[in-house]
Length: 220
Image 1 (cartoon, one colour):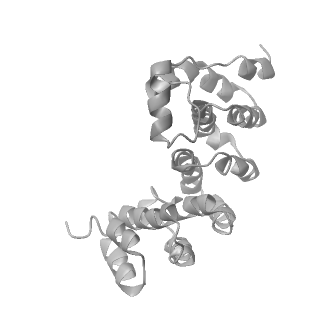
Image 2 (cartoon, one colour):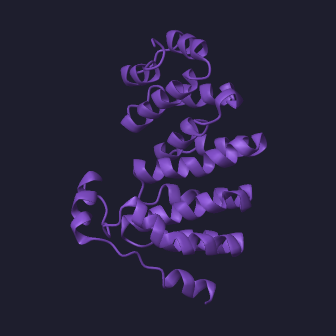
């Protein structure tokens, strides 16, 4: 089977009874096949395995092709492909996938892309800087959400200058998903250095949402 035919022949089989509730959960912004996560992973297992045997550019093309399909689960499979292949992607290839972040964006896909980029960032500090600079400089708030949460799993390897830069740029942004991301970043880092987070919150004017989210673990 050729690379093109492998992706063109891939189809998810869902339960129509699941489709409407899944769409409702996403505020009816997207169509759904009706495939829940365990079934999606099972049905896409062979494709994900095949992507590891294909050239990285082919895996990228598969993700891009899947993203063009209308049903939301295909975007999830596209991101699963990237999660399987991020180690094989160059920085240029990772950045070439950025348009998918803002294609049909909502928290579900954006936060899944954050996992892809976060893993690559944590593996190499130079890559982290390049990815952060690309996302943090964006005019699109979904991309800046990734910049804010790029280091969620970095723990004591967190670059505090980057974290502070991202927060201070957007601390007055009214977008809910940005303020939530600021709080999420602070809350996660408070597991590593609660005093730094405590000092940062007390020293900066942040939204009530960001403070509430960021402080969740500080009083335990």
